[in-house]
Structures are given as structure tokens and as C-alpha cells.
Length: 253
Ligand code: HEM
Image 1 (cartoon, rainbow, N blue to C red):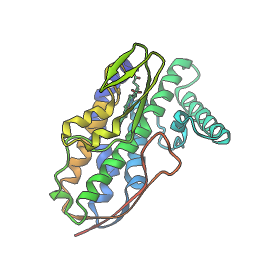
Image 2 (image 1 turned 135 degrees about the vertical axis):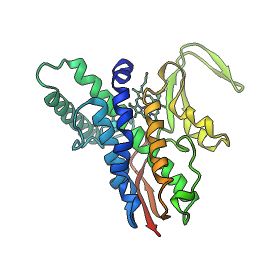
Image 3 (image 1 turned 90 degrees about the horizontal axis):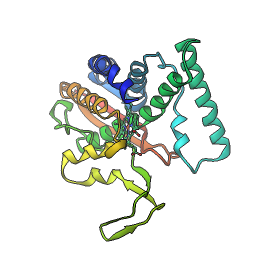
Image 4 (image 1 turned 90 degrees about the vertical axis):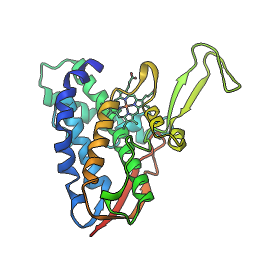
């Protein structure tokens, strides 16, 4: 997967400014904008389409990352399996009959692992920025270099070698939860790179996600309109990602 991403990286990175300016064009005019529906969700589908080199901009893959959630009901799990099958079918059709199971699976895995963390992290980060600067002109806001919030609050590991940390002993087989969201409350902006995990399983989408954040904040820094936060609510049935369901702002001169 890292080889696949490395091969496509230059093309996707070069397209980021164009994708951001087409999807975030709505914040350059006065009026109300629902940030999730009008900017972030379509932007993420554009980016993921470029990444897997297939047009999946019409795909309904909203539910698929719920597959990580161990608490969902059987009926919901059936719906996830159904949506996942539809997404897989869409990829197979677009790739053509010669495509191997591996080529299809790689793209499916990327769509599942990449889309929701990106949507959730951008949404939570813009909410934090707008909430702290409500009433200010977008061009007067000092934007953090890195996303200041994460949509991936927790990751899990199973301990394979015993160790001690901060006075706690961990034994082989213990389940360990790393609360990545806590880095949002450390008063040291660079620490938020830890949102992308560490070690062998560090997020493969990190450079891309940071480049997207930089392009969004560069665009916002040029807009001489005032932003007023109107409403924000998180997805209420998501135990895996922290993601706004709605994030509505008013832009005015
Ligand atoms: C800003 C948004 C993102 C955040 C906060 C994020 C966060 C993370 C974290 C914390 C992990 C480690 C999971 C673990 O240790 O269990 C991870 C893994 C991963 N991420 Fe991201 N991610 C983001 C965006 C993306 C995007 C856009 C892609 C696709 C290009 C992506 C692809 C992956 C992959 C493939 C892995 C698995 C790496 C491995 O297990 O070796 N991520 N991500």
C-alpha cells in the first residue's frame, strides 16, 4: 500500500490546490455554508478518487468505516457489509475484468482507512478554529500549521512484550488503548503530528492530509469575510471517529 501511495503521490499532491479551491469556493462568497456537506465531504471523495485513480465521487461509502466498530448491532453490520460489497463492486467495474482481487482490495482498504479519518479530522479542526475565532475575518485568523484536532480519537494494540509505563505494568495479551485525542490539549502545536500514530503503523496518509490542511488554510487566509459559527453537532452513532455531522457558518462582509 505504501508503494501504491508513493507512486501516485506526486499527481495527487499537485491536484490538491485545484480540488481545495473548487470545493472551498463557497466560503469566498457571503451567505450560509454547511461546511461538511458543501466542502469537506465532496473534497474527501475527490481526493480519494484521485488516490485510487477511479471516479468514486458518487459512491455512498459513508457507513463503511463503521466496520471497525465492535458495538454495532447485527442489522447495522449487515448494512455495512452490504455497502462494502457495493463499493467493492464499483471498484471492480471501474478497474475492468482483468483486475486482480489484490488490486481491488488495496483500493477498497484505502477508501475505508482514508476517507473517514480525513473528513473527521478536517471537520473537527475547522470547528475548533471557527469556534475560537467566531466573528473574525477569515483572513485575520492565525491558522495552526497542523490540524489542531483529530477525528481518530483512539487506537488499540495488544501487548506482545511486557513493559512498564508511567507506573503501570502491561502483560502479554493486554489490550492497550492509546488516547491520541489527548494530544489536542497539549500546548505545543507540533505535538499534533502524533495524531497520525507512530512506529511501524504510522498513518500512510499523513503527508497528504497535512498538505490538504495547508491548502485549505492558505485559501481561508485570503478571504476577507467574517465567519460566525451557527451550529455544530457530532455524529451520534459513531464510536470510532469523532466527526461533525453538521458544521454551519455564516460568512459576511
Ligand atoms: C487527517 C486524517 C488522518 C488521521 C488523523 C489518520 C490517523 C491514522 C492513525 C492514528 C493510524 C494508525 C492506526 C493504528 O495505529 O492502529 C492510521 C493508519 C493508516 N492510515 Fe491514516 N489518518 C488520516 C488520513 C489518512 C488518509 C487520507 C489515508 C489514505 C491515504 C490514510 C491511510 C492510512 C493507512 C493505510 C493506515 C494503516 C497503516 C498501517 O497499518 O501500516 N490515513 N491513520
